[in-house]
Length: 326
Image (spheres, rainbow, N blue to C red):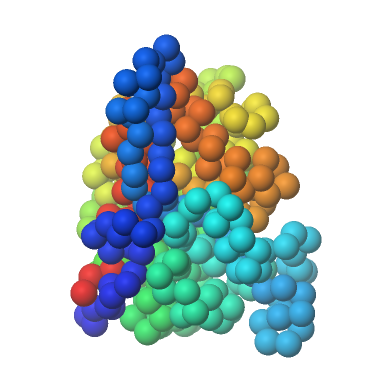
């Protein structure tokens, strides 16, 4: 397959001193010398956010899907401002439902800011297989590095393991891009499909958005969902996004009830299969973009988490997973 150049791309594995931010992990009760030793530098990568056209841009060139007009500001200029303020170096842009299968706005952002962003397109499970053709075009021509499977876009009565779903999942693996699953209505509804796809196509990398929407368990059903999430660690191709923390926490910022979940995720998957994500712009009204990044350090300090593990979660995993070959 054609390879996409990584020249000047933030997601190359080589570190650039001009594009790193500081991560500080300070164990409780640490001395000054220990505090100094825990400061490290790495690229900060937001693995999960969205952008969409401003109302004027939507009117002029990038229309919203009917009924999906956003109520939040989510244009790229606002994102860049938030990222600069927070010290975030790059991000993975997930195609938003506001533009559905029209990727023109996100593609324009990727082309305008190749050193900042990579894209995750949205799978179109149309029965005429047009979505498979679109997927290949978005990856090979427009440089997208992941594809999102939203099970609620599949035709009624169909699962992601239908003929079209398997074809797209297989093709993603062949083209070297990851497949992200959005299990908004519960992992239990989709766990068997994920098992099937991972088993049949072990070369396709898998992303679970927002901890697969598993909250700190309060009952047996929720405990089973989190257990199912942990069990997916047996598939080496599966990665978990420690993202959209406001969606899964039962507490306000800094979401410290997620401490035990993160601890178990690190133990089961390893930090090199975990990655932080903000879920911008939704997070802005929840705690603010900068605070979304800071929450992970607060949680890490509570565990405490090693600086090496935090580096992986805050950037190294994403850099490695989404590296564009040259």
